[in-house]
Length: 43
Image (cartoon, rainbow, N blue to C red):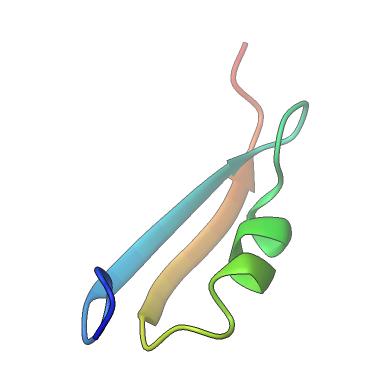
C-alpha cells in the first residue's frame, strides 16, 4: 500500500517548469485518482 493509494489528486504544472502531463505520467502506476490536471504560467 502506497502513500497515495485511494487518494484524489489535483495536479498543477508549470509551463516553464514541470508540465502537468509529465506529473500525470509519473503517477500513472499508482492507485491515485487524478480529478483535475492543468499546466499554468506563473509570472
